[in-house]
Image (cartoon, rainbow, N blue to C red; front, side, top):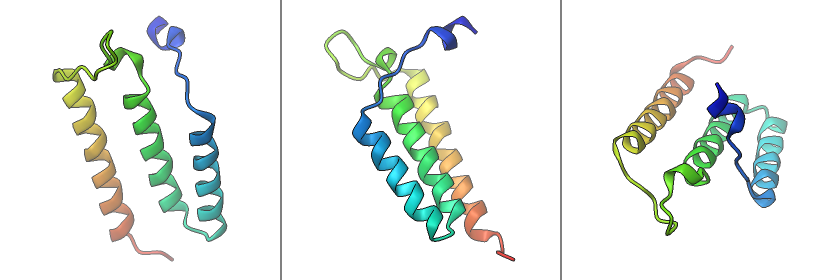
Length: 91
């Protein structure tokens, strides 16, 4: 639990503003499921590309087994969510 509490992640303000703007516009059009997918994609991107533990001292991405598992599980979640959202009927 300490690892989660001690982790610091700096997200650029421009990306936060972009997420807020996209989510607001999409929610104004009533597309809640699309807003959920976009929010997840931003979170997935921030968790991987902005996480300093995935980078070496030179700033290059360290690709190991855990990195591939993280990317694979994240992409599977996105695909399953898209399938679920597209196959469900709106009432």
